Image 1 (cartoon, rainbow over the protein chains, first blue to last red):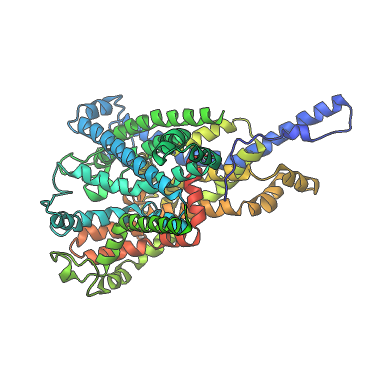
Image 2: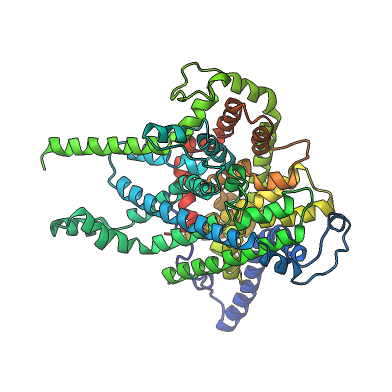
Length: 325
Length: 276
């Protein structure tokens, strides 16, 4: 199935309707039809607009409201929490978890997408050779991306178990001493990054592969005639022509990886200590992680996360726009 | 290049491909292996790399403990598909063909909506649901889960429906069909592929959701399978064969999706990111 560009040039509906009446008449009728046309168009978008207002805007508003009030469990249910301005944000900024969480969020995100991208690109180039079984194998590569995160996270957690995990057994086999993957503060972040890379490779592979498919084959033929080696072909043709797709995959990967929560929470809960806490897990821990929930600060951390996501999200939109024009 | 060497090179490439795939899928294999390992062998050193004494104890435990969770997830998944299609399909048609004023802004809003972290939405929904008394209900969870899929759904429908030839819609108009009728009996039937893609993904995402379930439905009568597994890990963290057996069962929809609708999956992954 091929999906067609959404912004494909369209014949304007008014132009295709030829009328036989006088010019003045036609102008009036067209305007009326135009107005009716707009009404119909809006009627079709109305369910979505209502949906977005009720199920996106309202929760986001509630979240903002939470972060600007001093909520307790009682006022959370009964209402009447006092307005506290930026207090929650101030509290969060001075919390000893703040800088570790920021650092971990960026390390987790950047290392994940860097490795995912390189692995995805190498695999895409490899699969682009279209050997026997390549279609089947490419499909199998999608599995990690499709599995529920709780499934992949708990599988990795057991594989990384200090005493009985198969990973430590493999290390033992090659003569390396065992690692406390999830229980040592030095390794916890690395461990969740490894699992996250595994989950994200298919996404990179699929998108980069489809980008490769769009590179005209005659470019490769011309390069082959000129006697270019495969590394040269990659450096001079594949990589430069893939740059727009690469920008999309990296920015989108960034925004998606920034909000990863399930994986880290299931594997380490952000611990030990704060060693694998990111903004997402910290926000959750503040709001729901203990018997004394701190909804205000939790929502504040969530809003900081949105802000970071938005910066890169808008960058992504800009890149996409410039590619379309 | 002579034919035999080319053939040999192609075989070599296939072998490399198979090895790479095997490495990539090792965790999946390991999940299957552990799900069949008897409890007393679980902490054996070295671990059995293949299930030498396979047991179905873990799967028996799944049948005994997890059936209600699985059925709940099925219900929530199907509900989410419906709630996703209802606003997404007409909006996709409008954005692709009817060009409402402000349509461009709406598309950007949808792009941004996709970037909002689930945990933030969960906290907002938590506040709302608590006040409205919707906590721990399966349909509250359907509402929350649908937010993962609706922006994606609109984008898929828009991309797909702008490929429908204008002549087809004009012909329906000449035959006297109004916009609604054209949408229902021309646009939707030819958009079957988009419908399948959006349905598959919204089902899979609702089935896999953990964030919303763990914040909005922890005490309900009907809880989804992701919480079933999470509870398992928390309660009896020794019985890893039962945990992994549940994980295997919870992976069935993903596996089915891959077998039955592989081309839609790849198309869906790509369409979310690049339009070409």
